[in-house]
Length: 172
Image 1: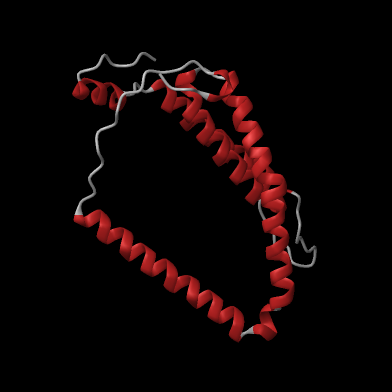
Image 2 (image 1 turned 90 degrees about the vertical axis):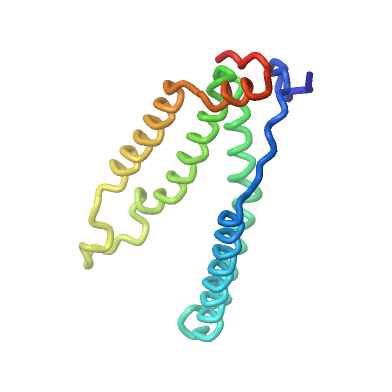
């Protein structure tokens, strides 16, 4: 038995089979890291070399404000919402609900400036031409429909892993 936070019921621990990564996966990871570092280096180089156009001081202030806002406001709010939701939904649904909440929060955060019309310029009608509030609602509906579908589809992976270990498959 293990100690489970937030007063949830303890679950019998079934050891997971070891994960063995093939050469292709390792090669893909290394390639993705190399490409990612190259893209970041290109961006930083452009940021520094075009300092007259990019306004580095103002950009660093905005970046610092985002970092502080994330760590002081957004991350704690996400943790509280996820913790409360985890206590309100059945055990089987917790991972799916957590994922849907995180995706919904990210979507809302990205879409908020567009929904509020920030940057709208009446002299340029093509600046914000869409109904971003409606589109956000449609996107959120898709996220939660996928979450509901994920809860309706039987979870054969857990049952199969338990059968391989010779244990009784978990219920739910």
